Length: 270
Image 1: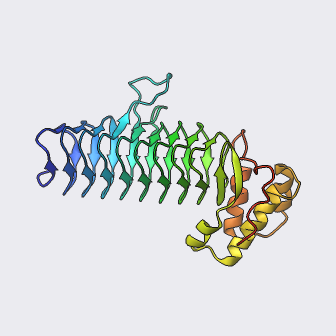
Image 2 (image 1 turned 180 degrees about the vertical axis):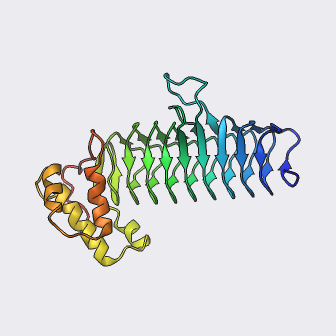
Image 3 (image 1 turned 135 degrees about the horizontal axis):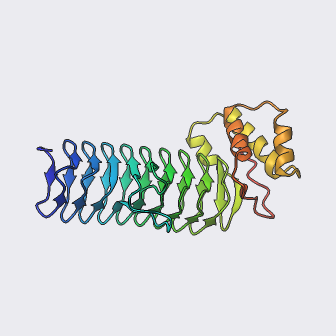
């Protein structure tokens, strides 16, 4: 780590693995089982402890804490758990990212995500690529977020729930049920329609968007219950994105998916 720029007040364990062109700011603490990839910036008063693997080109803001033990009463310190962070992520001020709880497990954040100030990522969460999590969102343990989702500020997410690809969550919302791909969600466990602007920006074709709309109508607006809608969908032909929407629902956890807000007809545009 000869070319790393480490402030003289930082405490970096000699066993830590520090890549090229890494910057570590004042009063930060880097533990012995930490790996930090090339061109990563760690600002001041950051604590990275336990087994943490951070890829290249990341930015870790002031006061962030990564790799602390999980807030799980069943956790015991001798368990071998870790945090894995990919490349080109932005983790802003005072975020907390806890390591896994079950032995051998990890909390995982992939690539090119943006965690704004004060975000909490609980143990064993799995975050995909290009996810934006706005200020002060709280993710309990084992939350999964698929690529391209946007979580509005101050929102909370129950343990073991899933958030599908390109979901848009309004700020100050709360969820304990799964959110299927491509939806707009808000308030407490409600879906309000499809994220049609997000679908266009993500480059989905008009044909794919129309099929997603048909799948959405089948699940939420046909008058069928979820099992009946999925049975009917199995007899129909859908392209991959609409099938992704339906497959997500069929594999949802026992709490099921968030319902459509009463009185909302869903977004009929494509």
